[in-house]
Length: 359
Image (tube, rainbow, N blue to C red; front, side, top):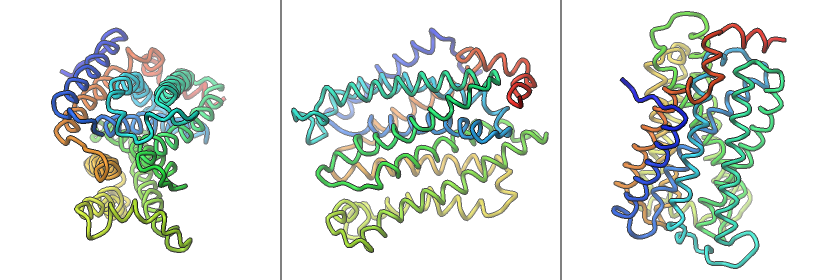
């Protein structure tokens, strides 16, 4: 029997996970490193990306997501845990070369504070959106638009500040969008894992959701590959050699990371693209769920590649912290009816939300 959380046990579980992550960092990563940063980025992208997918469906007046929404709605409850992890990660901020600066934007206090505020704001807007969407309120679309805009700004900021700024003064104008697209793809994969338990359902609603998620993985994996390739093509046709150093250290054949770079490309695009070319495979949960795990593993490896050449990353610490957050995420999804009261209402009266939504 899986763990089920109520509001109090959810808070306690989040605190326990943060405490264990702190202990793991102290024991397995005594020198400031990036393991916890990678864990936060993966689960932040997964939670926000999945919720924003529901917001996009709401904005476009879609109906395919209605049965999926109650469980996905619970994923926003991961954000407070990420906030706690961000606080726990403060001792690791010495990995940033600018952290002791006294500048206006890049200084320690403002850096910590603005990301805490951003996380809190996204959580509150996401909770407002999912509550209204589950109840079929017409105002859900307004909050969906706000959430999408926040997601684009927030994940782009994370790409720039959490990862790109470690290489300061190197910069790339595509980097923030690349991380944002990676997060959205992670959210789609989270949805594929959530509906894995529906693999034996043959009703039209379940088939439509499965087909939609399979198609979205195919489409956005290709969109991710476009951004991955764009990092290279812009340097070539724009003749901007100052941007080559970052990529050369990570994808060049002369580096120890060249194999990882090619594995990432294969895991996130080549394998999903080849498998999901088949229409039938898009409708098979036994196919899309393993592909989702493959993509999520590739995204995790991608974040590792961003840090590893310049920041120590304890692999054991990273695996333990990902395992802790995976358990918390699974418990949150299983507990959706208690953590999101509107989800219980929607599942008790499955036709009500759809009827209200159509008006």
